[in-house]
Image (cartoon, rainbow, N blue to C red):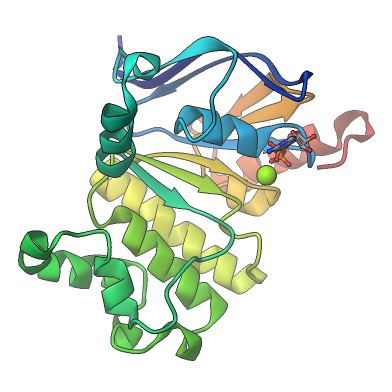
Length: 246
Ligand SMILES: Nc1ncnc2c1ncn2[C@@H]1O[C@H](COP(=O)(O)OP(=O)(O)O)[C@@H](O)[C@H]1O
Ligand SMILES: [Mg+2]
């Protein structure tokens, strides 16, 4: 059997006695690129936050490489988040007073900085930001800033990237460049990706789309050997089936 990076079993999460996640079962293979789609308020962000142990949940387990992270103490959880996970959000969360290069190197310890100099160049090239590495973020476009945030998330070679609507604030062209780079990174470094998006076109870069509805994962689509266009059509058909609007 193929190795699982993530296995979520019967996850239930309440906010103020309201059930937000209603028993989620979800598996993800190593190096898989999975997208989560679903209406606003259906629990996508909460799901990611529970996986990364940023939020506690009432019932269920999260296994990462077969290990139940619910058994970790605070220190082990902090190490898990630092060493295994990379985060990309809709907001880029860059520091304005540092250059793009300094922002990217921020997660590294002083001792690590030297050994990662070349890695920054390689990733910057892949994400098409090598020409702005020594500029401050305000001099870069939104798309470039988000690509910088991706490189910062990747620099420590996490095994799983959690991305919450990374193209949410980008125009179509910038979204396309970002998604191509993310896809290339997934193929080249075999980084597993779990990404929430509203955008069917961004979703069409994935291997699989799962649809969250009312706190549960319902249907899913696999790309298999389809080309991107056919896969996109399948995603669109699923989204507009039964008048659902994501
Ligand atoms: N910190 C919180 N306290 C109370 N309710 C919350 C909190 N965060 C999210 N919720 C509620 O949980 C539901 C799911 O939210 P969320 O996971 O952000 O959905 P999505 O990311 O799919 O839009 C929403 O009804 C939201 O109002
Ligand atoms: Mg959300």
